[in-house]
Length: 461
Image (cartoon, rainbow, N blue to C red):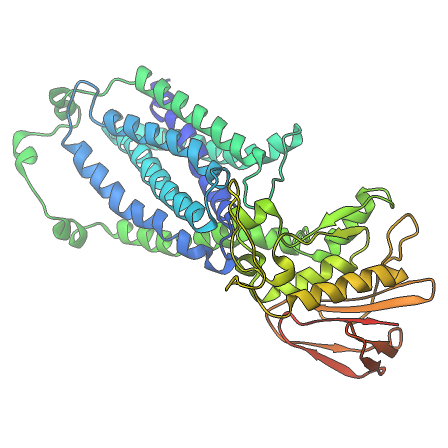
């Protein structure tokens, strides 16, 4: 029973570690990090492990106090981890800018990994301190069992909370409640497990420890340098170290890209076409949804559409006018291309004639889009809306579709990527059209249209 008590806290520590490894990439992506740069955020955890684990090991070897030898570091690490687990998932709910929220999350990640390492290492070392050679294999087997059990629980928490009805979605830039509650419950289990081990395990005082491990006075006085220990390390040390080195390559790739990769390739959550189809199925036909690229909250807290979308701002603005069951929203300043955040609680005047952060051409763009929406029956709202009919053979990153009603039609092409895309015209859409500004445009079957990055076209007839 004592060997179980010795490692029971490891169950709680591993829950925290599993929550970190499974959700950190998701949290930073939600806060606004580019998925291609997530690996930069993961530099800190192994770096902190390299620094903290040896330091805790050396310092705890020299620590003998009323609380014990390893317990002071165990308690300190657990307390810091619990505090960080309460703050980290709320990084998007503190009213910070995108950069400030990511900086806050980065500091929390550094503290979380530091504290987890500080709490984890004492458990490993306590096994070596408290059991004899004959018992070590059993003790480490128990520790491995509790470690894997804790990982399983930590990985399942968000799924369990979603299953019982806690929301797994949240407004843009905020972490879902299912993840937040997972961290809260994980923190509670961590501190309870650590306290249980602390109350049920008594560490040996120095004299008893020396006697238990047959350490004589001469051995105590010996001081060997790190270089000496590395040079004279047994062969198995280097074999295991090499395997661990390459294993962590896989771990880091998994933590960085598994969540986004599965979301996109298995569930299609980043596929706009899949979203439009699921949205249409979820609501009655007459139901209208506001579609926008900016509003009061988005602009003030997450940034203007130019800050968030860059070169794709006009692309998605046009898309809000042609998707079915949508009511376009034009927020203050968008019609003049205002590229700045507006004050949230204070009066913030916008002057389209003098504001230096206004862009050219946006008034004309929104004028043309509004005119199209009001005059083309294919874009009208109501129960008898014109469905989207996708053109076959379009590249994966291009939305190419028509909508027709009462003798009017629109043909829409949107390159939703930062790469040029070539679209081959099919017989189903060939014919004469007008551009958004009224110019003539002819589409010939089997001809090619080269779309620049984020380029879009709306043709009418």
